[in-house]
Image (cartoon, rainbow, N blue to C red; front, side, top):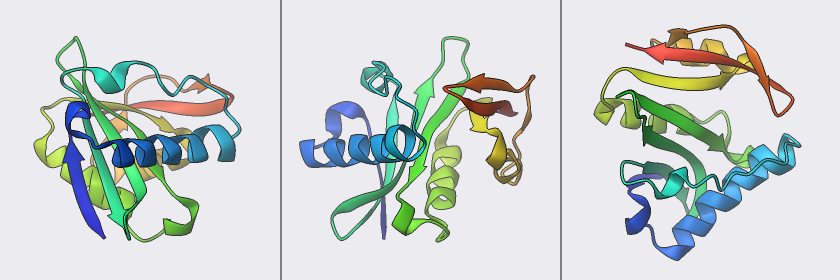
Length: 141
């Protein structure tokens, strides 16, 4: 397994396709949430894409964004079903946090908020429903 990180402009088309396919497979198909994954934020100058690759295939990913208020947002954390429970998302999150300016914010699916707490994130507001899934706003100072 190899970990990678790049700005959007530095992604080759095959990697970009792999990232987008994984996000659609997990969020749109598996979680049955038809939402606009292509939200324009991948293109922002401060956006970084982190991914794990095995045998030339993207098997886990996340996206890091610079927010207007100076915080860093982590999102689109996804792991292919066949690659789960192997620490890939943890490795990506640790790599992203190592270079992310604080504070770091994210919207955790509430069922895995405790996982993010293991990295030092704490609740940062009331739970809310987004695309039919309960989320918890979280912050790492």
